[in-house]
Length: 197
Image 1: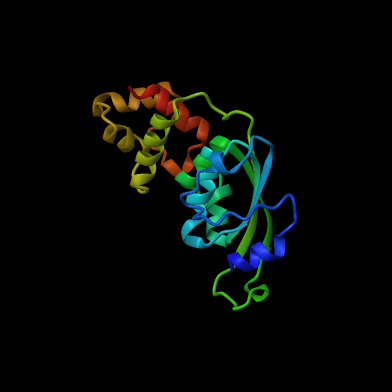
Image 2 (image 1 turned 60 degrees about the vertical axis):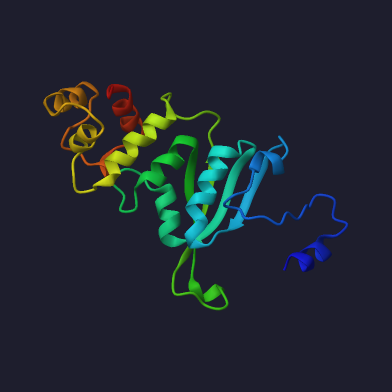
């Protein structure tokens, strides 16, 4: 496909064909500092890693419009309490706003897949919505979602908080200790990250 693509685009000044694995690409090296829009049809198994690598490592990409499997797209833009809300949803919310642009039925593809797809649009925020150290924030988020049936109280204990102090610490951060991770917003995870020593 690459030789055919290069032949078709030969002589077009604003197209540069880069043969690379999108899951390992060095985005800053490949892109200029000019504003970019990522437009992609992403396979199920790499959709989340590619989107995350763009949001985290390619600040010149101001918008991403991606065609992905329905469940993946719903996960990327889900909010607290939504069925598909999880760590990827929180990571996207940290750097972008998202919306479902349209549903895409299997009938438009050949060969026809067994799954439905969606087009999702992600618009990068100028700055993250919250000011907290990202590495620690992601440890708190991952601990919260590690055992979905357990409360956020259990998660902070797993992070090293004394069980006798966990309820007070969460209450002081305005978090219900009985809440589960899927009920908590980015801002609430940030308050936990700031409160947990």
